[in-house]
Amino acid sequence: MLIYEIDERTIGIAADTDQNGTYETTIAESIQVTLGDVNEDEEVTVDDAQIALQAYTNLLAGKDSGLNPAQEKAADVNIDGAVTVEDAQAILQYYTNVLAKKDPTWEEILHPEGE
Image (cartoon, rainbow, N blue to C red; front, side, top):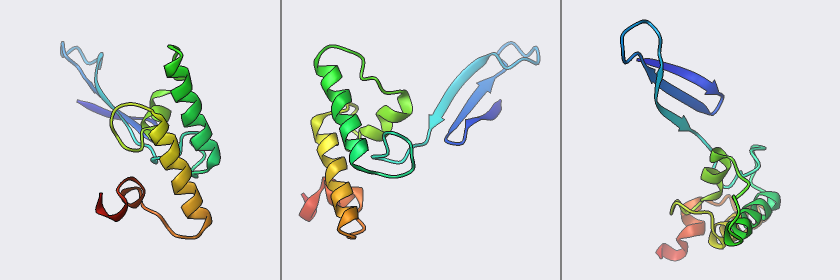
């Protein structure tokens, strides 16, 4: 088994399945993201909400989301497997809470008052 860094947010695991000394089979890649940070600039801002909304619009039109796998994972803040208008709204709400210096959590944004 070989565990390797793809970039600062992603690792890969490979196996030498035929035991010839070459790791030819990628078993898994782990993508680490910051929820809501769709443009990967290390901040959750209105830009991220706009990008998520554009991705959702693209999907509605039958197009590709326009996002890479890490961006899709970051945009899917409710972790339901899809980038939706609800994700974009939640990202915007998170950002407005940051502006109001409320130090929000995704749990508070996604499940207000214990919903």
